Length: 369
Image 1 (cartoon, helix red, strand yellow):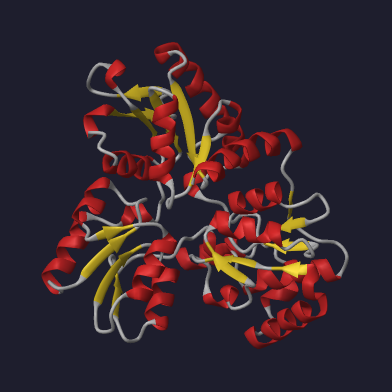
Image 2 (image 1 turned 30 degrees about the vertical axis):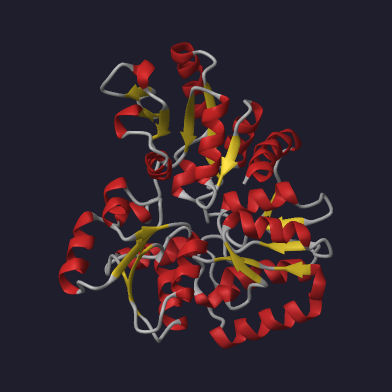
């Protein structure tokens, strides 16, 4: 059996048989009908990395936190069918009311980065770090993390960050405490801290598998402790990719997401959040050339939307985010029909205590960024 066949079989786990044989036209027609019938009772947020077959039906496209906030503002919506990944749906459930139900079309749509920091590892790490450094650490977590990690950070006085406001939040945190623990993406943490003037030799890495601090010098000199996690998509952009673009297209601008490695960000012309990348391309002069280091569905959409510019992926062999792509047209239709049938599937529900602590972490960010 080929890899593609294996992936296809995994994709269909849990999906009722009838959806395997429907044509694209039938599914699109039915989704449109349900959206029309439910009206304001339904809201479909779609992350920028979703496939076109799904994003065409989204009521709002954006980044994870932005979509959760927009969902919360749609108070008339009884059902939020979140086309993204699990941690995003959790955030939407945290911010929406008890009367609203958040649904994830495919429960296997997770995030490898978020999964690299589970609550048990984090609590164990915190105990070790407290014994090493005492009460000198403030935890920060990227919003690309589970509700449990957001709650952990909120419980210990920390905050969430986004790729757009990470600089602001790290500066705030380092005024509060001597050092920070940055979860779960080491690359965003390292790039942000470096931009703020913190040298690389003042940054340590916490390995949750070995449960140990990785640092060459005196641990007391460490200012930033980076969780050893990463985005499986953005880590696949390499220095070699940049060298190839520079050689083939000497005049091309290279822009990447700060989830890329330090080496890639340093050699690029610009870096920023998904929103920043989109806005940069929109504002760019016609005829300009761009190599973009982010998820392939978004890059392809930017290529389609800006035919007046020469746009390529920084890595021509890049695959889309496989977990994000588990949300497809059949799963979207299944989720919507389950609502119509009165038995909604895949409802995401976050425990009240977890929600309260997670809200505290989100609020600390929103108050400052």
